[in-house]
Length: 446
Image 1 (cartoon, rainbow, N blue to C red):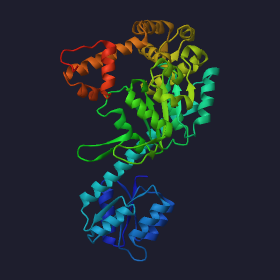
Image 2 (image 1 turned 60 degrees about the vertical axis):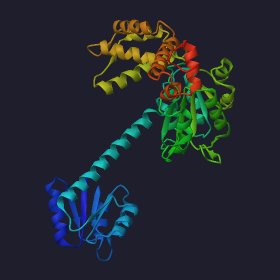
Image 3 (image 1 turned 90 degrees about the vertical axis):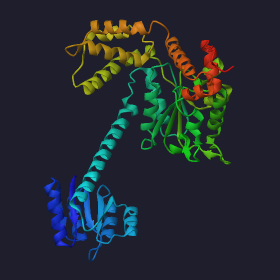
Image 4 (image 1 turned 45 degrees about the vertical axis):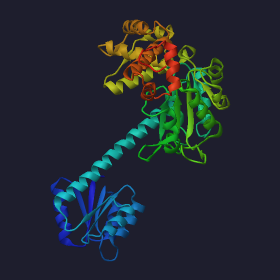
């Protein structure tokens, strides 16, 4: 498709451009009028049409409209000897990829052509990556040989095209993020953007600002995800980390599916689809106090529980085969699984679920030299994994959170507001974390 078609009724210009571009290694065709150009495009597609604007019978602007209509994958660059700003604006507004002024300078023509071809290559790569991402996260890729996981896939199929919010809950490592993406890329919104927002992740902007938007000190409006995603999908993670005020605001928005941007007087509809990940069912999180009553609305949403790996052992062969296939693609070598490996895996609890299973397999594959993953490799990897999993996962997460909070407070002595902003949480949430871990620093505010 990286072929260029030159269209000009001036023979000298036509031949000069053909010579210049062919000398640079481009494949070039030529036409002396617009109708001949359209006939050529019907017979053989090209990447770029370089066309004069002023031509008898049918001018370059008319050619541009027809190419856009009949061959939308072709870029059009218009050329003219009349340096008209209005003409350039009109051409670009009509869909021209670029605009050149005669007399043409060979180096400029070559640079513009290369720039357009480079953009086309990048767009093609992006399209391929997006297609691969969509196909990788479609529901049919979920391993569901077990009855419990099969029930999850059935539930996901029922709601994939719906606009209703969905809560996906299950233990850490069961694949809630993968399932959220699968729900998006298998549904009616697959062509729209997908965005995950983790309330636990440090950010320069508060959770509220990221969702609702904010007016910057310079007066510029920075849009939030509610507005930016439009018809896409917003995946909310880690709501348990939000402060009471933030949970109240979010609960009100989720209950009405509307939001009021700061400074606005009217509520706007939330058009993006909301997916929420929790480590337990909303009712359990509310009863335990992990979520405030303001988020009671989550109980009314579609709730889908993802079972832990220990409750879906029938899926182990499929998960291992999927890992081996992915490993072969990413590392360029085949990974074979010894027969007794499956028995060993089935006897292990895997408290970290699918995430831990894949981590253990990845480590074992690294140890393997000849591409055969043996029980010995797996046992060694499991021993290393058990060292990290000797304590409950919650304790490990707590240790990391304690260090993050402590370091943020130490970096901002006496300025808890700044420390909270650095962590991307409210001041109340920061105080709660400090009380939880017994952080009492002399320089902190009282």
